[in-house]
Image (cartoon, rainbow, N blue to C red; front, side, top):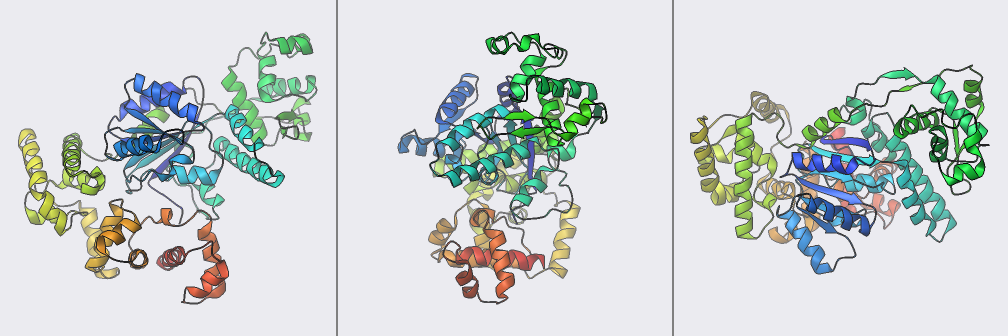
Amino acid sequence: SFDRPNIYYEVRPKHKGSYGELLQFLREQPESSVIVYCQSRKGVDELSFALAHDGIRALPYHAGLTSEQRSENQERFIRDDVPVLVATIAFGMGIGKPDVRAVIHFDLPRNLEGYYQESGRAGRDGLPAQCILFFNYGDRVKVEYIIAQKTGEHEQILAYQQLQQVLAYGDSTACRRRALLAYFGETLHQNCGNCDNCLRTVIMEDRTIDAQKFLSCVARTKERFGMGYIIEVLRGAKTKKIRDYGHDQLSTYGIGRDLSVEEWQHLGRSLLRQGLLSESTETGYSILRLNALSREILRKQRDVVIEALPQSLQNSLARSSRAASVTPGLAPEEVGLFQHLRHLRKQLADEQGVPPYIIFTDATLRAMAQQRPQSSSQFAQISGIGSRKLEAYYIPFTREIRAYCEMHDLSMGLSPEPAAKKEAASASTTGPAVPSLTRQITLQMYQDGQSIEDIARERNLKPSTIISHLAELIEAGEAIDVSALIQPGHYEGIHDALQQVNDEALKPVKELLGDAYSYEEIRLVKALLRQRA
């Protein structure tokens, strides 16, 4: 499945204050790993420079850097030397770090498939993560310029359709997750409850009079202009273009000074979304056109009710910080211990020359902060700690835990939460069999963020064997995120092929699908379908 329940999706309006919002977001969680995507190399350089100037440890990542610079910047990000990496859209896809807490698109993505892949860099450790898109219709010009550089007419048409899908997603008031999954052919039968649209309080308001002003202005300018120009006329802008066209003499000139640009944009997009206004792009530019419903509004035969524009982003900002935090549900003293353990992990990782998540994942550190193990047996019971890590890290981590607990007068050796114990007991009695040791090792290494090739090399096994381990674990009921191992769009194709062939063997399915699909993908999709059955 393409569903990532731990990711919180949000779209924010992009405006002059958006950089300040980004800065506030990063300052509220200075230790969290964040990837920020921009459309161009210039945008990456300017944003990373501005963030660094404002005290955020951020590095750029794009094709214009030398391979040595890119490798160094990525390595510093992976090793937690810097918390923020600013990358160009698409080029930052090679960044492999399981504990990225937020992915932020500061520019418009080119298509939903790329947006899903890029946002999928967040929360690969299964802990809460955040994906924010700063959305502005004006950014479409940058994407349209890129589309115009394409040589084939069919390629341009397809790219433009994909851009329209991104614009519809950004402007939607429906569940974000349902929209993304629908793009990949999956159906979510209920709202996710973990996106901005699902969590916000919707207030509806009658904006019929303002809509009549807007549509009247479209009519009086002969339906020849886009939204930005219409809003300038409504707000009485003193521009040469307006004077040259004589639109400063219209009755609608300046009648909308009481509303901000953002309020007029919100109304205009709402009219488009409800089909009360049409848009033409035949000339390569957005032109607003009246339709039958528009004329009903002008004749006072139809009212216009839209969602109110939020007056403040404070609730959104607070919600985003919680969503991207890895410590929700922890008591204040547990949060403090968690941060101490993260610093110890970083110190050990630097000494060993490995990324911190190779030592322990954030999920394992979180469990340590909650249970505060004292003995080796208690330490070994925590998820993510095998015999090798028990031997290597038991002493330094329990020493850190003991020192912190003594300083803050905390008890040690606590049992896991009752719900977790109950779930574990239920699984042991009624669930699938406990996976073998070799599969458990594969699972731990995969959840530690290692690639299939790295796991195979370290364990002296074939990559196909590692894939088989994961598939067998999925069939046994393990919740494993393998979306990164299945190319976008392939899940649905394999699903259909498996239904057509109806054969246990993989070869007939592979022959039906062709060389674009791998045996590994087929094996994993088959396991996911069996798990759901």
